[in-house]
Image 1 (cartoon, rainbow, N blue to C red):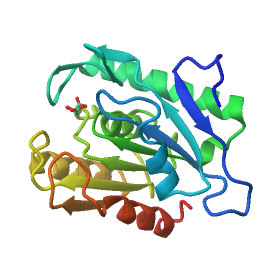
Image 2 (spheres, rainbow, N blue to C red):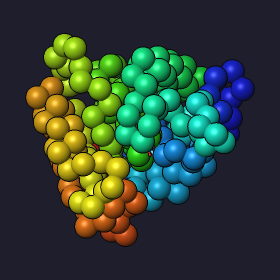
Image 3 (tube, helix red, strand yellow):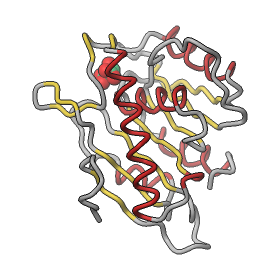
Length: 214
Ligand code: MLT
């Protein structure tokens, strides 16, 4: 289902009827560089059957590859652009909640790589917008100027032990930043690189169920 009035190209899959598993939850799916709004729909369906799925396409092009914000080099972000794009994404989520009628207090982001980075930025710049987040291969998007308050917000960080893009210290720093803000952070290391490990989505599904998000 698409709504032409919303300013991101996107897919929206309504939630299963109330009473079904994950009813009431909306997963905000944020793809990696070169992906699009279709990429993570099967992932969302697998980790939260019955949840609504809202899946925008990043509006920045790097060559022909969609992204959610500009970067200066791999792992080096154009922070003013990231900040502006984060505000745009937050506005889109709020407009989509009104347009599609889902509960804005029950939105959980699930992002991979570039999508995980803008999800982390959304946590820092719009605390309260997301009820939780699954950040798969995320980096510290920027160091906040002022303390951020995310009391009790559940955040799952999935990191690759051999990730050539994200140094282990950066993943640890992101976990510390979120912990310091009061988030309930779970950092799990996979024996892999930037790509997802075969059993990783099972862990995400279990974590969502255990985090009272479902
Ligand atoms: C990013 O630019 O967000 C990160 O370098 C991850 C990527 O998209 O490759």
